[in-house]
Image (tube, one colour):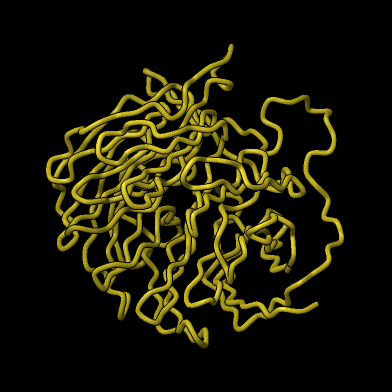
Length: 412
């Protein structure tokens, strides 16, 4: 199984990596089974591959939320090493490709350690944040602490900024700015046109955190972000000052592992309601204006939520899938048949909820009942990030760098 990476940072600049299996974090190593074996289903849909392509070597076994994005009639995708490609979304034809290892010179951080020097092609760019399409550009971030804007039409670099902290979640783009939340506890705003830094907000991260960071969201002059202390907050977009904070995950337990309370899922907004969820905390519905709690429920997750059609769909830390009413948080159904399979965040495809797993299977769940009604194996060493759906076509990126376009038909 893919290992979920954790990291520790101490006051003496000591850092280490803690590896914990995603399906049994606190349990006995001898407990069985560790994950659900797939059982036969009565299929109600027929998946069909429309095209497939490759975008380099993918992400391997590394932690990543690197996702494809569909915009401007194209599918944009990248691998960890630095290859970024654009494909025609209808045919899969490659339209352009750029190798950031050959195009940018900056301080390079390798997997073996940090050192300052010229970026040279043997070393990976370590793309991990994004991709995000806006303003006719593609924005991405790297574990090396870089934010890059590419021309969506031809892949040329528009600007490159160094933020000196790893970017491992999607940037937020809007209102003329690019906002990144780094793994080291910084939120920075950059000018979307030039990449010039506008402001920086920093919070004190705990000693032990989940390997990840909540993607920020730009909403009506505010920046919504969850931090590694279990706090949700809104920053004023113009200056980065804090407008309000609210507890989402409350650390509890006898050791640091049990007290993990990171908010790693991207905030979801519907109207004036903000939804946030913590790894070891709760699902909370907040008033966007002042952070007042409308309701909260006991669910724990680090994957992004899907909020649509009056429902909240989520994948929890055990790879159980749930559907709740958006207005009051009442649970409509839960499905535990895929426990421990390191499910991706859910996506919405033709009135179904879709998740991918660590063995490379896609699972379609009936949105009203939660029953598994379809399954398809794409392989590729696993599906690690939620599929992207555009005009009823679903685009999936696998760990080994495959990009697959699919649709479904009704019938066995």
